[in-house]
Length: 161
Length: 152
Picture 1: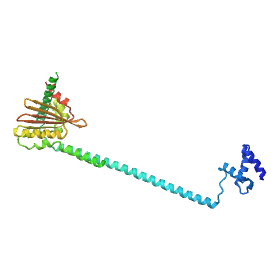
Picture 2: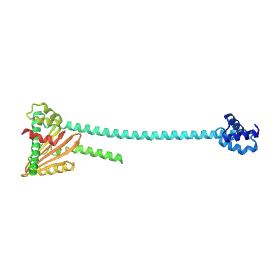
Picture 3: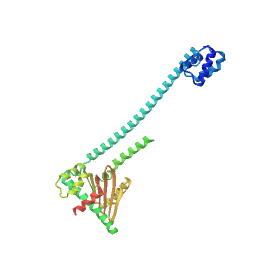
Picture 4: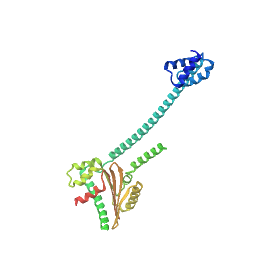
């Protein structure tokens, strides 16, 4: 394509009148190597507008090294993410284990105390082996307790009245 | 810090449990002092018996233990009285009643142990006699009050 034709197409392009084929022709021209010197400014502007379609002018080696660097960084980021995830998991597991161990100790201790208390209660010898005697003593003790309580309450009632 | 606090609470609760019967144990083998211990197992048998008073049987079935200490040896009365009052104050029993009538002092202490379990103590002190009745179980003062009321 000659320079005049390109200038004509550019004029249409800036007015927004180009077809998709014409835009493709412009893109191919400006992304190519043999752009006329008088259109160098136009090239920069056009490429800036068409960044998505025209890859930047980089050589193959630079591209490969950039690609490698990027891959290396991505690998490093992945590694850091994995390590931090593992650390977080380890910390949460430790925390859970700590809580579980504490609960186990508390439950074991209370079970032991409860069991011990029950055993000592059972181990205590009853004063009476005969339920009739035990009943008589219980009745006597509870009656004494009740009478004393009622006596005190009566005194309070009398004072109130 | 939290671990130390938990351990301290455990040790204290342990001490509290073991110390509950210290008073009765102290005088269990003393001349002139008689102690009575009736377990839950024996108290549980009472409702099955043909007892004349149903209310006592009913309340007896709710008890976990009943302990009585009686002393008719005048020389021991002040010592038991002082020890008992010091003991119930030390273990934070609530003094519910204090009646002084004609030289006879009647004290009622109470303590809630949680899960509906209560402990009530009657301390009856006369010049030459002292009686302590300690009941522990799912009972309330209202239950105890009703024993004499319903019998009358």
